[in-house]
Image (cartoon, rainbow, N blue to C red; front, side, top):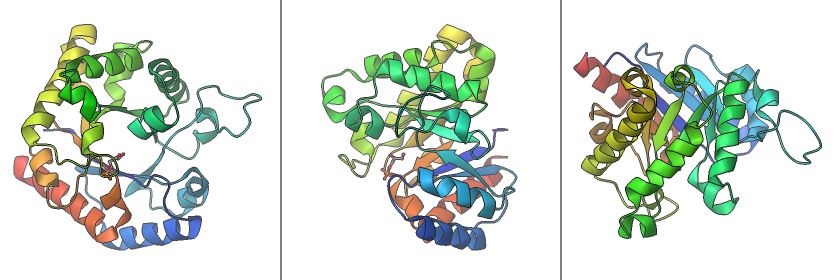
Length: 260
Ligand code: 13P
């Protein structure tokens, strides 16, 4: 594998600005720079500005957890991708928490993906089915619908640069927290790449990075990263603990060293 592994920590709505800063300092003490691993932190919106000045940019990049799809205007309470352009390299888009708690539809996710790309921010697009959908045998249909709508207005070249994440809702710690079998992850990610290939061709399908997310921790991360289809992980709960998160990064580097 010649791509870097991408390890993203989604801190969700946790940590004050001060606590975020402390966590970054702890991570900077423990995480070495690895040329084969890219580490991305997604703190709260409030912490992005101070952390952008505190982080060692050779070791970490920042991601927003969300943003609004219009660039500016009378949208009280919102922050646009355009405003985040100087602060972040990535933005998480279509996370299941946003889809389920904040009514983000397929069309809203599509608009946000486009806004991110328009503003030179790489979207990390989350795709995945709920437990109910899985039990009803709808997994592939849900993945297909979420993926094709999200990518709808992008060119093949733009898609080569974005990040997709298979993040089944039933595997997320704060939903059902069921540990996904690597075989299930492999099957879903193969299907996602196949969808990209059908629509945009083999080159784009091979280039697009696809992550796995859902209860990933230092004990099971290796089983996902060893899959040739997986280009990294999106980590929630374990990214708030500097022992666990730095261990995950260390294991990613080990896997890369073993495979190259
Ligand atoms: P957990 O790792 O806590 O299951 O969260 C996954 C997730 O939602 C990351 O965005």
